Length: 250
Length: 284
Image (cartoon, rainbow over all chains, first blue to last red; front, side, top):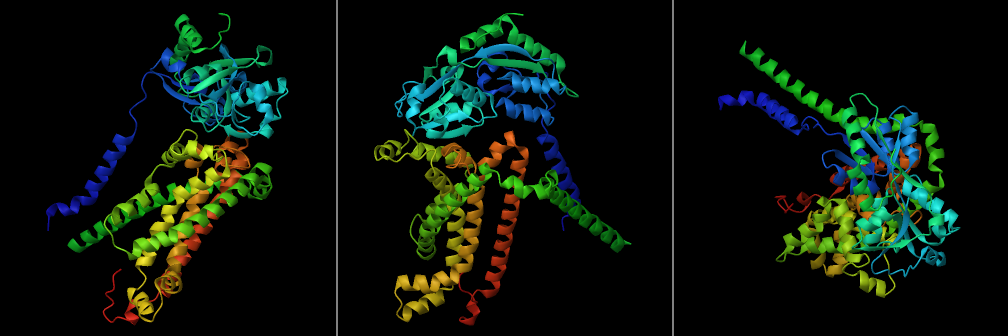
């Protein structure tokens, strides 16, 4: 019999331990973890590509941070989520760093023959919108009530997406005849979709707010540096080029 | 001395095994237990009365009923064919049928989108004939059928294969045609295995999420199944999401239990080949 045989359990344990050690992620790098609204998915990495990003619906991110997710920066597509975290003492006072407008996206081929928001009044089309809890969904519903078009959410077949990127992909892949997104999303997917403008007077004010997350072990310095980059001249240029509006400098 | 040494080593080894079992068990059981701890069980029926939950349950029931019917109607003859005929490329065919088992559901969804979505492979033809699948219940049916059918077909093949060949041969010798042999001999003998396979496919269909959300969208009352409802309620009403989860745990537990009962019933009641052949060497 092989004399080594008796050491097998030990060897097995050692092997398991090695696998565990290797599998545990390397120590965090010196860049903050940024939780940001899905509509910032192109602009933020352009401003700074070092942070670890988590793009999703702002409400989903807020929930994750409340449950102790290791975020250092939170950027939400509406003040609601950032202010809620601030009131709970979970982040610094949020500042507005960008604004946005809503548009109606249609696939290039425009199978639903949608010419304006009012085309949706006839009903029977497939429509992608944000679910009520996510900022784009709340903005969309506010917009529709200003346009007196809330009925289109009943007369059309409506898919509720958990964030604005979901709305964009449903339209870009032709699953939906139209979808409400931000003007910046129309630019991101410009090769597959067309944006139909929506009258200014009906636009709800869309404000993006950013704050540094307060939690034990947060990279506060890294978070502050990132926020400063977003609000600096270069950050503002990148946001403007992507189609965002900018608040007055302050 | 030496023997006590050996015994100590053996006890040590058993302790190590038991420790690993304990870790495995705790890891797998804790999330399930946590679901029941997080929300008062008395509230669950009330939470499940939410109209969104009722819609999701109805959609799930309707789509899965159709999908399971399709799976049984097409899967059973297909499995019988594969179990009883040998032909070149058979292994490849079986591999293709089994592929959705290991395919990530999101990939399945994108595949369905590329095939039947607008602008997909058959999207224009379908649209031309007035059939638009995305955002409809039929899209859910397609997604469920795609991901769940391999569970049934795979099991059905082995159920038909384990039917004792001497019995079907006897039926043929006694003058039964091939279709009669299939219906009156092979089907009843394989029934236990077929039901067991169907139970697995059913469970997979109820749990389907990835392909549905990619291909069918999240339309309340049309494509929002219970799993999609959990995903949506997670962000608006965590308690409802928990209540649906508890319902699904109970359902899955029931499914698994019935599968186990069926399997043991099948083992004890299946016809033993040794009754007919003394060697008992008929192919397994």
